[in-house]
Length: 153
Image (cartoon, rainbow, N blue to C red; front, side, top):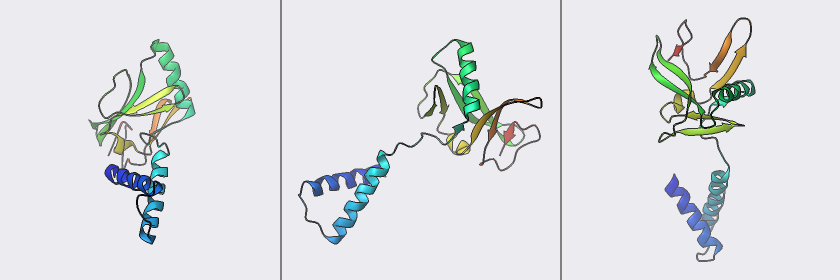
């Protein structure tokens, strides 16, 4: 897609400079090139995980307790558990090749490229009730989970 995008912008540049004559087909390609360029300029999140406001406040509080400003919340998926995959949530200072990062205010959420498809559309929240306390992950990609709630498939 990247080469196609470059071709469309290159062609658009030539058209705007008047180097080529426009036919009906060229006009259609020009409109397509404009649409592709416009779509590319719209900033899209690096990954599809949502950190709720409640969870972001809790993460920020925990980061402040750590006393470090180089840590980010890393979310991942690893093989294991009864159902096949387990979630990982931890603070990490590393920048790994292929990391996908989204900033939620003052909290950066980092996901490795391999975990991203399993987590796309997931929502991370924090519950603090008499029944439970901790981070929860609502993941539309989880087909099933085990009784302990720690793993999914």
